[in-house]
Length: 504
View (cartoon, rainbow, N blue to C red):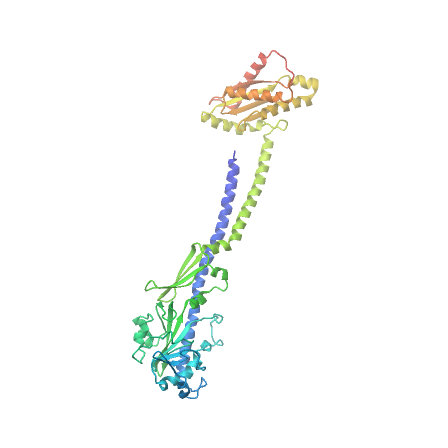
């Protein structure tokens, strides 16, 4: 039978330990929510850094065109450039199918066959649209120098109607048709910009000299959803061209990467959503996933919202030690409590236990009285049996008190092994015993007496320990004390009816 006090103690320990470690887990959860804010802000800063680079590139290109310094690509005059002009599928330019013009690292496409019209711009392109066009570390506040973006950068010249991309493009397979409109040598910024999902208001801001961004659109060259940033290039106070920088999946992943927590990165899901529609750019997802524990949304610009979610698996894996510590701590505290409960129970048991027989002593009476009255109120039978040895005084006088104690011990052991666990065997003192039987009438009391007799016969077929007894069935008006008196009276009546003297 479970001890209610012991059960309540262990339950309280488990609840308390669970509460403590739940608080610790909740604090870790809140810390991760704040870290998701950091991921978003850090990514925005990285994009802002790249935006600054593009503005610097546009400024440098504007300066270079205004200075009009010739020969920077190792080219003496436009005739040298024109000597390397190629023609593929109605498109003219440089490096159309491979790098045949080594001073230029990328590809230039145009529909204008008049090389002399645009050849003078080539030296400036070769110098300024390279990796050294970024911010000067000497005066930059940015700490993003370690980030390696792989974005594509274009320059669209509105004066000489060509497009230059800073890496090689095989024109046999792809032409920038949205800028190089067939049948018309002039690039129309109003028409072409719409093809990369730039709204009218942003286009007007670009023409006023502002840097702008596109909505999410599907790039014809990469066949993937991307975002483009546009920066105007000026000469003599007028827009000469536009620098377009594409932000791909890898660029966004670079922006929002978490180098301080590489394991967390493996469990992040990140995508950029266009606020004007359902277009998204999913740029990172975990290889293993269960369900999103933390979800975070952050406005990146007026056009885009970052959606980030952290998988529960990360929280579980990184807090396994805390879970293990909680289990071990709970078990240790329970073990410590068990030791003290057992010790207390042992001391309590010793206090109400008779050392000679192992039965209860008189100190159990107040506790037992409360239990008996509760049972009687439920109309459950309670029967009391009074037992004592026959002829104990004669044994003590003739054989000695140690033999008398042995007789009492034998009778006590017979009682202890004959009653149920729910019953109580009590040694009141000397050779006087009482037995309290729960859910038992007089008939069951007689069965108990028969078992005691049988136990005394087991060690010796002619038992020398004999006893008398009396049984009384309690009523709701009785107390234990009054029931014991009634049982004692029946015991002495039993003694008087005996005609054979007994050795005890």
